[in-house]
Image (tube, each protein chain N blue to C red):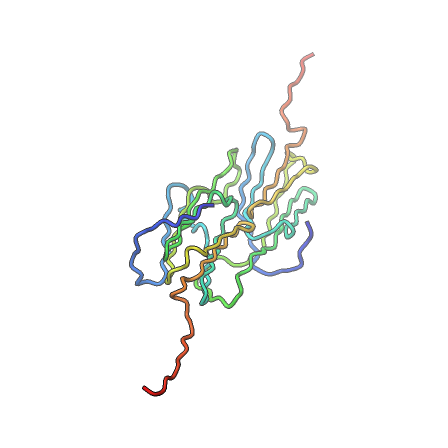
Amino acid sequence: MKHSEKKEGTLTPPATDILEMDDGFHVIMDMPGVSADDIVIDIEESELTISGENSYVEPNNSLRRLHIEFTPRRYRRTFSLSDLVDHDNVDADLKDGVLRLYLPKAEAMKPRRIPIS
Amino acid sequence: MVIDFSSMHEGSNEIERIFEDMFKKGPLGSRRLFPQVNVFENDDGYIVDFCVPGIPIDDIELVLTARNLIIKGERKSPEGRYFRQERLAGSFQRALSLNVPVDLDRVNAKNENGILRVTLPKAELVRPRKINIHSRSGN
């Protein structure tokens, strides 16, 4: 994923769901119009920052804009990761304009059986 | 993706463009419009962009008549224990009226990164055309 130089559009925090499933935590973000090349995911210390440049472009062949509800956007949002998360094994997937981050639980947090000696 | 060219009764076309927003049950309809839509027009036709992140093209239904375009579908939310839920989920439907008839045979739709672009060429009879005026002598 390379960083894009273009800086067009309004900076917006993407609508986000955060949920826990059996396998770990999932962070799901709406980033319509953004392609994988335009997404940057940084983890620094315990801060996770997601940025995306919107690649939505209006059709441009001498069209009149009859009705406009959405415009090009840049997305950015930062989360702090708890110790519950395995920082080294975060996985990301972009499909149909939705970014899904998978954050596995840290080994120390997984339920385990304590043997009784 | 289903493109359904069903025949629907034609409503009054006195108003050029009407957006009707009908929501079924679910949190979707509470505040925000979904999906957001942009409409562009030129002499050849319309381009309608719907913002539909996270909805596979197979889960979107477009119903098109000569003058109406209706989009419907459902955005599902995954099962889990939610800490935060900001993304809209549930059934949605929006309808828009086009002020001139479109050519149903040449409608095209594609989904790219969650933006569904529907291209609707205007029906041949309503496209502006140049009429050659021949002057005839001897009449």
